[in-house]
Image (cartoon, rainbow, N blue to C red; front, side, top):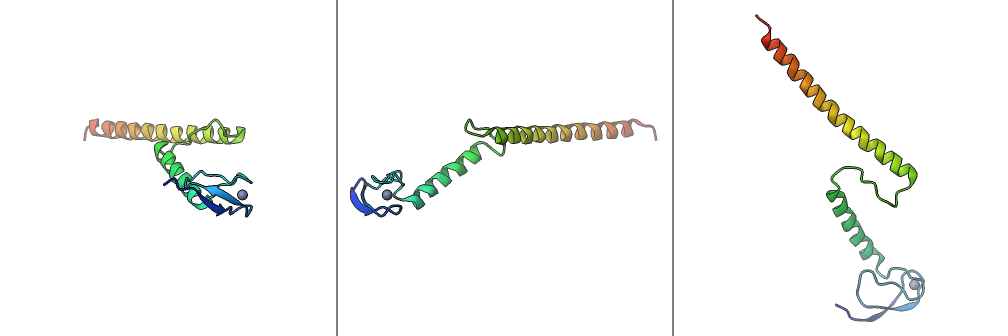
Length: 104
Ligand SMILES: [Zn+2]
């Protein structure tokens, strides 16, 4: 599928070479020659990343200071909620145990 064709760049309108790759760029303006297809590939990749990261707020090195703080906060909140659930569950279990131990 590496057939070199001459196509009109969707960004600057110049005629440039395209060999069918999704990341081919215009020789003149450096724009992607198939932005729709390219963005779809990126979208697919991002979706895969999201699945891989589960639903945790993964902190990336390129995140800004604010995003990092926010993500760290949300992560901590998640863990807090998780631990609270466990504590609640243990508490209820203990209550039920105590009730069953009571005579009557
Ligand atoms: Zn161009």
